[in-house]
Amino acid sequence: MLQVNKETENFNKTTVKSGHYENRALFSKELFKVCSNIFLDFVQEFQVKEKPNRARVAELIDDYNQRIGNKLPKSAMLKFYSLLERSSFDKIRNENIYSKATFYRYVSRFKLIGITQKNIVPEGIQIVAKTDLENYYSHLLYNKKLTKNLY
Image (tube, rainbow, N blue to C red):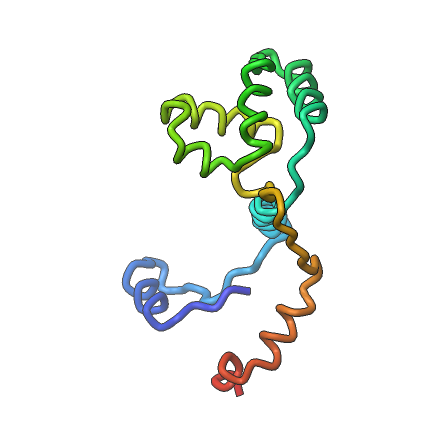
């Protein structure tokens, strides 16, 4: 259930004509499903993955081209990916090898096959993170600065 603050309560009193309004709203299963799907899609975009090899990228392009009528240019994308194997999207953009429009066209094409600026790790960097919420839960529960006003 959603709680409203005093400003929302005053706004509702002055704008709602019926004279009756409820200061709580039920959270339906359908709304929860929509919100959780949006959240999970957002989280998935930031999941860190290793850079796939050229053969895997070629497979991803072929799979996409078979499923979708609009074909991705495989040879051009593999040429761009050869730069990406040794670098990152940011470094390629800063080196001005491609025009801005061409660079962002490649970024959007790679996003279609699941390779984004946010989800690949540059070589030499290893990130180890827990996938559960134990640290977040304990931090929220035991952090005195966060919980002092709750009691």
